Length: 184
Length: 184
DNA sequence: CTATCCTTTCAGAACAATCTGAAAGAATTG
DNA sequence: CAATTCTTTCAGATTGTTCTGAAAGGATAG
Image (cartoon, rainbow over all chains, first blue to last red; front, side):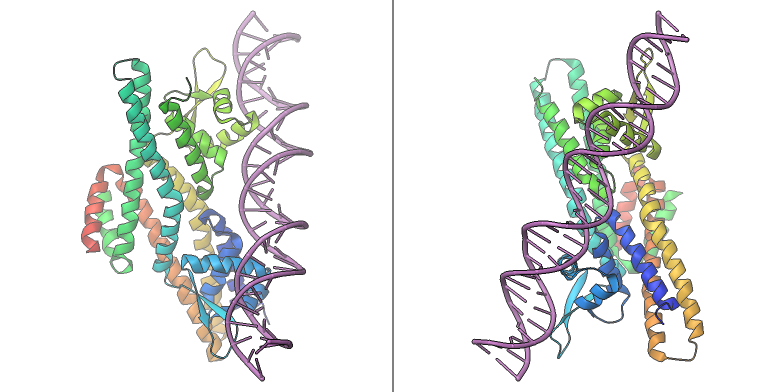
């Protein structure tokens, strides 16, 4: 019987994981594939994924490729079988590191770079206006101030993630303790 | 002349901020509106936004509503003017808190809740199978283990964000120092 | 109350992301 | 090597999201 509590919770988890996907910059199907691999206790092949998620072969193929590129999924070969099989990276800290790296590359780095360029341009413009129009200068100075704030914040968030990943699972208790102390 | 370095960097920043938006679960226009308000040194009205971003009145209206609901933008009235004006929350830490709260509500809480339900179901199922099919039990136990890992990680990330927001800007240097020490 | 000015709403249009399925490409087997 | 089995690719279809513009809904002034 296929609606055991086990299979119910499997599909519940997979569906939810997929729904979350959009906000993680990952397509629903890609997330569902990852979820299914994550909770399976053996490598799965393309047909397993097609059957269980009801999506086309091409779709599975494309999404697996991305997952493999990211490093969230590995290809494995079963001895005596022509098919390729796939397993998910299952250490949640490792997953966190991979996803964070990817998101940083796409979300943080481009904006940091843009802010840098903007700041340079504003500095230039301020030089031009050295001893003229006071209100325009004030406008520029304020713009630059806001960019500075943003830049500072992003840089900080960046290093925080780096350190967190380095510190890793083992010492997270210590981190929490310290933060708790500082928060008081 | 409208292509001064100032206006160039304004539109550069706005465009990039808008591009980042997708991955933050925010539509491009919504982000552009926020960006424009963020870097403006005075409140802007609907027509300002329409002109500068080249989008329709309805679009501006809808997106402003969301921004106001989130708390990233405030309505303000100019004495002697019938129009409504808008200003952005400009403290980046405040922005961080608001966005984090929103994302947590949409991304973390639902999956945590789902994992809880799955764990309950698996516990139930294990009871049923108390003294039968060993391989099926092993499968369930492993599934549960992975859910536990995930749950632990999410809970932790959650408290980390809470503490970070509490600690705030002023003490971030201390946080970094501590983390640096632990990372070694 | 009426005119004026501004905001909100929403059906349908425009655009964007994702998926399918069939055809082409690789790899393995006998 | 031809046959078989599996994988990848991509044009076009499907689905989902965002935007427009016009109409309806306030609010204020006279």
